[in-house]
Length: 286
Image (cartoon, rainbow, N blue to C red; front, top):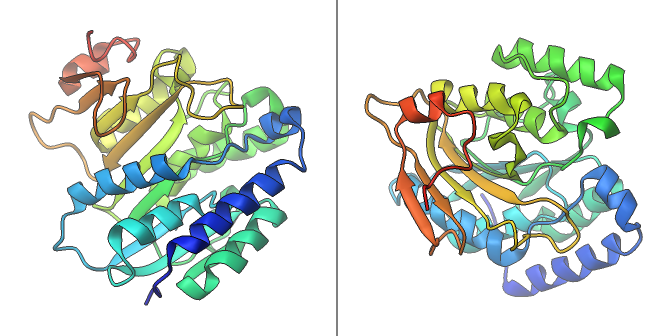
């Protein structure tokens, strides 16, 4: 059972996050792909997913494969309340962040696994499958990944999901695929990732995965002029989906600009149009 926690812990988390970030140069953080999710955005995402889960589902088993200092766990605790969180686990490679998350949230019920999620999930040492994943994976570009590791990830992704990932794909693509394979069927996930995959050839495999194997519920793309992370030179998209094949006639919602709650443009797009579209940033048409 997850214990109650108050807002002072979130304030403390933000302070620790800032302190750890300050120990690394902008270039180093860019190479590592470390860009923390702002608390207000994490809360918005948790709240939106909560509307999909509804109030009937009490036993939420939360997971974040790149927990950082615990922004998404903090949001889940605030939005769903400790009584609905049956369990919570976070995986983190960076020892400073893993220690921080453990010190901040262990007594609130968060289990922190120190390690590389892609290796943890491969060796069968992952905790029981979650039914809710909220994640902001590392924004590591392919040229910062060595050849051997990239080939390992390609083999692992194919083994666990049957998806052949293009060598130009960033680390976040592997995180999304592997974590979804780990997640329980009919579970919900929300991912904050770079929007570049929506338009490029190496994003095709992920787009097919989202339209054919998952029930894509929402894709909210932020205005490129409104970068979500002050030091990340990328525009972002929130993908929300259910781990289940899409029902007949399903139409995901594509939104753009503004906030998740109040986007500037919105449209429903049929799966047939999505599958035929080379670029997804044309949706919604605005």
